[in-house]
Image 1 (tube, rainbow, N blue to C red):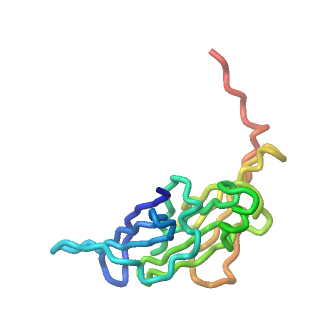
Image 2: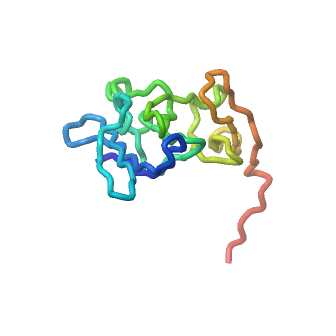
Image 3: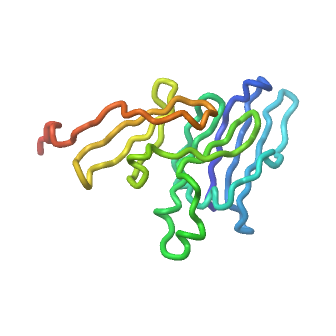
Length: 172
């Protein structure tokens, strides 16, 4: 089963929530929320509509929790080929979920690097993508994007790491 279970803090409600995003045996996409309370808790469906094929691209890496949102790298283009790739594609490769409103959204990667392999992380309170350019220029790039709901928020190149300039490992 493709799944991801994580915990985050809902600042609006001043409580923690456990979120489980998965594809069920019925092949449907599900998101459930468990509200942690002193008197116990219970599982319920997420308030927002789960995007089609959201869990299809989960690859076992945990999401990033930043500024009240979870961010998953949804990698459907690598997991499927041919007609499946078109059927299971997503609008963008980064899925977001607001913990307080429980609404999903999509975040585009840096436009200049949209077709490269990358990993997501958090650096200094910003969403970060580490882009793997080893096949073309022997480099990694780190791009950061401040959090926020504005669609005008853009990515900035933070640094490049040239693998050619690094010292070679010594064999023992």
